[in-house]
Image 1 (cartoon, helix red, strand yellow):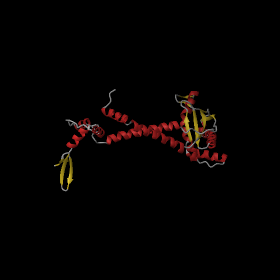
Image 2: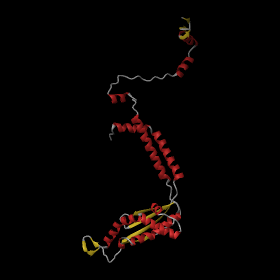
Image 3: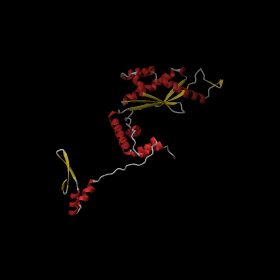
Length: 281
């Protein structure tokens, strides 16, 4: 697989900085763990499942293809499935939630608000069926259970009094009180923290490289400006240790010869004078 030169450069840059990326990703993991342990609140859930169905009334439903025939059982089921989204939207209205709160307050003596009911309840339709599910999530097991039990009654009444009672519902799975809290999801949250840290680190490495206008090699100079390179000056490293070792291993006669041949420069008054092993000159 042929990759663009710029893509190859970015990949090599990321691979070169893999240690930095790994460190930042681990920091993100620890941050996610710390946040989950200290700021995520335990919650409790109760749920109810309903079955919606079409009710035969004196106002018979007619098939769209033949107005003279009554709708078949399959058509009735299709009608209830199509109407589910409409009823669920009715359950989300402020008026319905306030009615649920008022009825619940009468029964329990609490002071729940419609907004609290609305924020704690979620609705879900089961695909390819006429069933739907409500889930109540709060920070208290008793509260979740009480709201779910009240919804069992309030939802059935709402459907009975809406659309001439053409679609009804039955409770197929009643609410149960939660015995344990929802899991905090440490593995999932830590994985998200790891990925977020890695993405931020990669973005930092790439941005820093893109914003760096310095020329780092002769090839980059030639590619950017089209200037031919005649030659380069290599870097020399002076190793003082090797020089000192060579001096220490020299024989006395060699040391004397070196001392005589060395020239020193010093300043006396306003004049510079030189001295060698043989004297001043």
